Length: 279
Image (tube, rainbow, N blue to C red; front, side, top):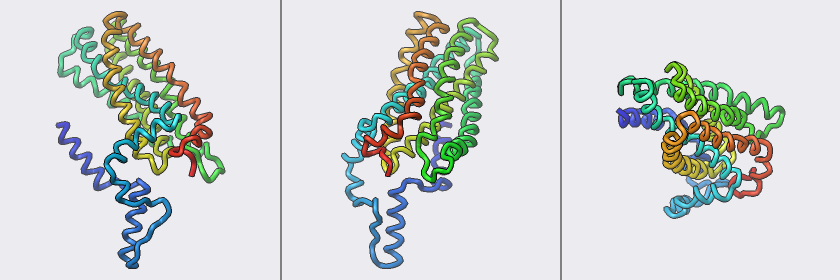
């Protein structure tokens, strides 16, 4: 089923989504111009195609872009820990539902729909609000800043720790299962609220290097998704669901000021990196 859904999604991406990478668009324009006029066009910003396809350059570029920008490093740290809580929830929820609430495996799987509902609502809110907030903050300035993408991230950053803590204490106190599923939905809502606009910021801030920057962010996200859930099990075994998830929530809260600081100073800090400075 997963492979089938992935295939359908990939087919929709290939047929319905427009190309947004600037270099690819410019190359297509150059090729079209050459076909129509019989002479190659070399617009500014189009590098030699062969140099862009060098395997080693492609492999190391994401890490170059990520580690040479303090702004991207900070947001990558915040983003990878934030998204790792999806995996923490994924491995802890079945145990809670089956051991604490006596759910069957079938009902346990169905309960994950609450996370999907929260995530879906977050996607709708982000799609409705992200550009409107950007335009509002930009005001009369014809050139906006990537930092105008961060207000929703800030909201998600400070509400996610509360959702994590509530999730743990509801399980610890054995409150009605409806409260637990509501906390799971809130986890989905706040997690996506902190993650989706973050991707928009990375794309805007990195410009021509946005693909490499997103690759670096995704790699760190996968690493955090691998190792952070390994810490949740020992915490729960030692302190119980309540205090164990309170510690995880406190850790998340420690990282919450990162998007606030970058919202305030990111424009200046971005100029120190060749990959994120304004054109």
